[in-house]
Length: 258
Length: 310
Image (tube, rainbow over all chains, first blue to last red):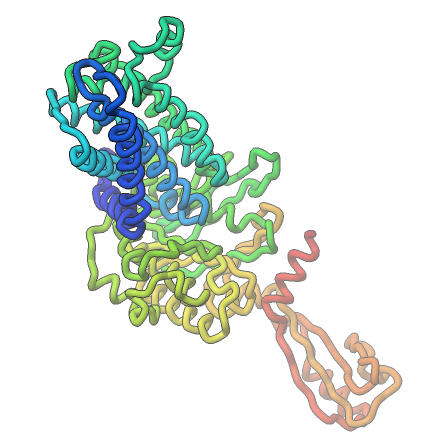
């Protein structure tokens, strides 16, 4: 194994370790998000939805689906990735990773890859669950998958950063709870930003989640709040910012090395 | 013939962000296949030194190579040679013994090899626990798991940071046996310990570190010969009030109850004068109940060294 080649065995070992944790906590990992998504559909789709007008030519229940999937994808990507790297730091087993011949790139591929895999699987399960409640159509399946993967990876990178930054469980929950969830709720998951007054619509455009939800919804119904190219570009920009921060973390050893 | 050392440490220093200097210009070489014991009181810099060699901490200055590979610029090659058993019992509680050991092997870039993992578990008397979750194991067993993980990728160098801290005597002896087997197989072993008996029993060479400075590095036998001392104790049948005149030139001390006369002398034996002492003793006419000699333990040498410096 030279400096340029990847330590594939290490990537596989970390990835499998992380996925094994998901299997061990199947109820918490999969059943819980499916249940909460179903409840959203029961409350917003079935109870409130029939009293709402169609949005962009689709029923309110169907309109909700991309937003709900994105909500789950963002929160799960962040929580899986942050927990994945925080827990070994918390219990001390991080010593093994730090003393192993594993590069920062391999570490990120393994942890972020596992977190993105889990959140993508959950998003697909949510999609399947949603199909039981509403009639769905996907106009651009390729772009749907592309947005799904891009968002999962980008927010898993965010989660990885949070997992390194956090030095207690409270901080681990702080960013997802106080920043990501409000941004997701205010990012057009449950409404079109066209429904907002002009001032608040402008304010909303500073919320990065708007671009993710808008692009993802476009892949379903061909309708978006902001141009798809901008959605894609913003997602890439956010991903690059995350990669730059992670690169700095490994370069300085921030919260990893003494 | 001079083989390149397995570990070469040159001018290593470490100052933490708090300003605390943990290592001061430490230089040390460790040969292939030797057991090197690093002794020092708490906070002396032992764990910091190991942490820098293994990649857990960054040095403030100096250079370290393992197997000729720089631990910073060529970290992949250097780290793949090293197995580390940390001081604390840090394990993945929910994993099984076999899985966690296999995980470690993969992490170090080795392909899966269940047969080798089973051999390691067998050597460490862990094979019966291969499918047990780590959380169900005793502290001693967890310590063995950490050793199994460190050995999973067949390292050429094994660091044991306080390997037998808190384990019972039987397990400690068991571990010593394993360490000797590894040394016989050519593995270089560096251990830090508080148990001087452990260093005395196992080490080929000993380094003493205190307050971040390496005070000495010596072959164990040389160290004990050079810095150790011997004592001749004469136990008397009847107590005496003072050291008899004929024995006075030899610097005897008398015990509080007057029943023992103790003479300390150089361990090298060159400065001792046992034969004339015995002749003088015969001349005193004292009734001798028993007579014996004792050698300093490593512990006494260590306390003398570190105590004097502190």
